[in-house]
Structures are given as structure tokens and as C-alpha cells.
Image (cartoon, rainbow, N blue to C red; front, side, top):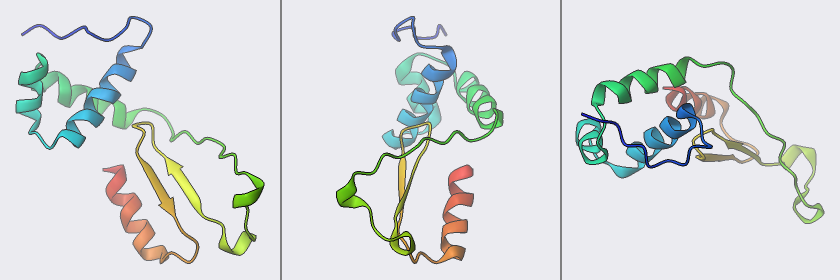
Length: 108
């Protein structure tokens, strides 16, 4: 089965697969059904998902906060933005054990 090549050429293959994987997760479809609808093999999907999980360290970005949103250091919130675009807002006073559990699940 041929792979779909609808993505603009300026994006890398890895970026395209990151987006496909995130789209499948949001879709609620099984991987097999998602791949059938998009015209690529489940084998390719699983292979890329594994490759992307094994790639280097997690990347972080600076969060620019306006003066109105700044609070004391003890009550500052933290937002984590994943490469897939998913976001997690961590409020001050969060239970550290619960946070560890959530992060472990998100890492897969």
C-alpha cells in the first residue's frame, strides 16, 4: 500500500509522523483503521512511533509570562508543552505523587 504524501515538502518526515501519531491518538480510531483511512501501513505507524519515542531528550521552551500573570514564586503555575502540541498545566500545590503518575503515563 502506498504512503500518502499530502504534506508540504518543507516538513521533515519525522515531523509529519509526529503529527500523524498525535492525530491518531485524538481520533479515537484504532491504529489499523486510522492507517487504512490515511493510506499507509500499520507497520509504518508502529515503526515511526517507536523511532520517535527513542529520539533524544525532551525539549523545553521558555514560557513568556506577562506582568499581569506573574505571581509569587510559591504559587506560580507551570505549563508543559509536548512536541505533539498537547499541553499540561500544573498548578501550585499539586500532589507530587499524582504528578509523577501523570508524567509516567504521558511518557508511555
